[in-house]
Length: 99
Image (cartoon, rainbow, N blue to C red):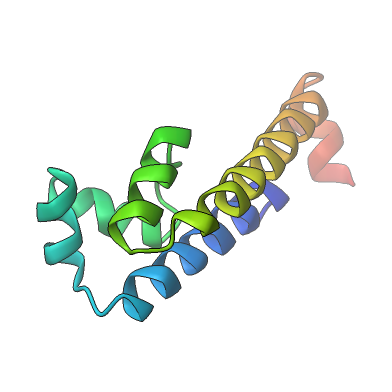
């Protein structure tokens, strides 16, 4: 698993913690946010990257507005990992595979 994937999964774990602490199921959260239930699942399992607005909405609905900036900072870190990964692959996959 790449640093980027690990960071995205870590963000998903934090989102799941917030939802659980709020006593909400994935379906309840998605209904309150007006999202398809699969979006909540994809975000929590690190299959999709949340937008900044998604993170703020998630925190608000979970009653943890103060957690929003921490989530946004975690997303920024994820973007840094993604940029690093792209730089590593700029020369193709061969050098990365040999490493």
